[in-house]
Image (cartoon, rainbow, N blue to C red; front, side, top):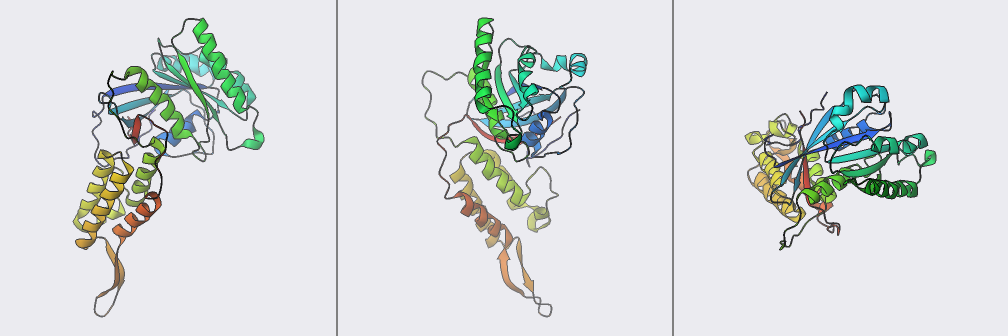
Length: 329
């Protein structure tokens, strides 16, 4: 089974330089599926369901590495029940570049079982991340933050003693329900893989990067306002010139990874829309047909976005990942 997501107006499935396989491992009902769907499609389901086999989701991420400017992530969800895992999912685990070991912070047994799940890793060298779900349920917590970090250290010592090349890069507490740290978790493990496969050159060029979360937030806000999500079905495309300005918006957020550049680009596009009398609305006199107090809805939306983001200071956190888009097969 595959989750289908398409969140870009213009997208070529072959337009990526590297493919990373990432596998999620953990007990049944710890929230692996919701973790993936929240990251890939920003959806969440309250009801629990069991995964009976390996399920694949995909996501495209952009980075500042010249030889990996676009990376496709194959993210595998695996069953948490041993009888299903052995029969159907073991093949999906092999050869991954990244593994996310998932436990439920409100279920201590799921945390204690992480050691057993770590033993299912089948790769020559991989980045490993510990993720504790349901961080929003603090009153029900049975696993502490310190215990997660201690397990990371213990796992690294154990793998080093056994001669493994794997590295556990950290522990993250997330809530798929309210999206807390979900993107950060996948950013962390993907960044680790990128750095491992794309070591810096002897004379690296200076870079001016925004954090992924800031770029993602801005582009998600633009997509929410204008519906630039891979089709011409948005209400905006019903207006003048069949969405000419929206195509420019989609290309802008696809091509740029700088907050200031995107905001300036939006203002320019909005000015064009206003000058061309596009997306104009207002009360129309039923007798004369004259539009009273006309306003450019497109420009109003842009003004909201610019006001919200123009005063934000760039984060000091540096990441080689700049932007995300979604597509699954």
